[in-house]
Amino acid sequence: MRKTIAAVAVGVSWFAWTVARVGATQWPGTNQASEAFHIDSPYPMAKKQLQRAIAGAARRLSRGDCQTIFRDFLDDSRQPLDARLDALHQSATEHLFALRFVDSRDASPCRADRHIIAFTERGSYVVYICGARFESEFVHDSVTSEVVIIHELLHSLGLGENPPTESEITHQIFARCAA
Ligand SMILES: [Zn+2]
Image 1: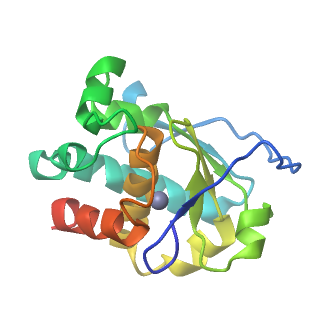
Image 2: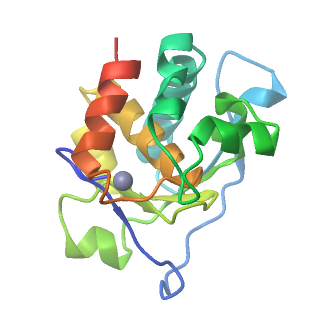
């Protein structure tokens, strides 16, 4: 997802960097295993902000009005994304907890385009975060940081791009989930 609206999904096979493996992260204040997120970042501030954003996205995704987003968009087999969740036997939040968020601030897409915040491949369980940018852009904007997480989650469920455009996806997430 780009800073203002758009996002990009790119192939990841040519990334040569490595990222410190920090392992599953427990959200403070809960001991429920289902609320453990997978965040790989050696940077404490970025990690903390990602934890907040993912937790906030989970809270939004638990609401019925936000869940209608999964009927708004189709995967490449023209099935709504909630059918994909059904096939995976996952709720939206369970799918979110299954994703791995990797701080990839030195990756080519982050370096090449200063508007890119996060990227993934369609259907992938790995979401790459331009960690430094994520950290600085969203210090005072938790809502947008949570929308970024939901945006990438839709791609992980099979949503492609163009159509719909990145801004169409993001605007729809705001409409359904940002109240
Ligand atoms: Zn996108």
